Length: 308
Image (tube, rainbow, N blue to C red; front, side):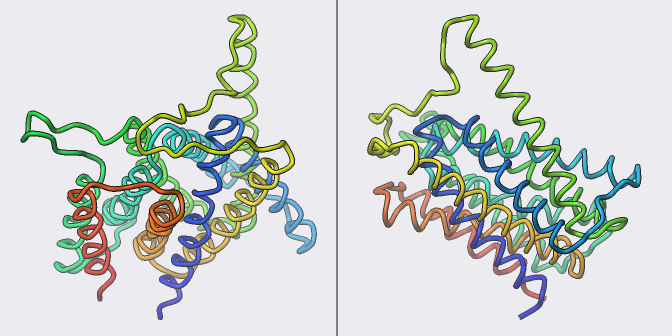
């Protein structure tokens, strides 16, 4: 198995499992607090690894600037994704976000000069159509076509930002090691996330509301009600999500150092497939037939893209 494919799949396994934990936590305390918790945990883990490995903190202006941009993109991607998981069915939102793998392939060709075979290009098109089918529901013909859930809009934003993260990470790795890039970018993501939560909390206080504590309506179709959790259990879930996130980041970055961007990005996009299987098997979520057909298209397209 190619090394890039292996590291991409490692990232997919970590991120796919993280998505379930993040979705459940987001429905208890809201996506803002979960995002902050996840990025803080991952930043702390990366800082500890940096100290233990005696890795120098990057100070080169170009590297810091690129890593900073990566951190900003990451903050937007996480907020959009976790919000989508909170307000929409996990299976649908994760299936939509899987499209970032195909988009990463396109961006790699346009901006990194990488090439694909005709079969791989065909696979990318099939995967894109499949992803669209997972995000819409057909009722009474074309006039009845609608988005399958409110989380789809956030999923589209997240998939674009995740693709931009892959390309930006690859560019940053040209001037620094993976640990330096991840540490610098994650510190920025954490700082931005904390600032956003602080601003929202200030606005909420003035309006006498509590949007950061918002959670999904248990009666919302496709979103199973979650049991009441104590604070310790919730913290453990968020810490677990943060650890899984950083493991995925490390596997992803190491792959980008030695393998084509499109291959690592594509393989890592199988993460939502893990989430979908868990959500359907253990959380009681259900997909419509057209959405299962879409997921099959995604799988076929992804396989075609991965072929030499």
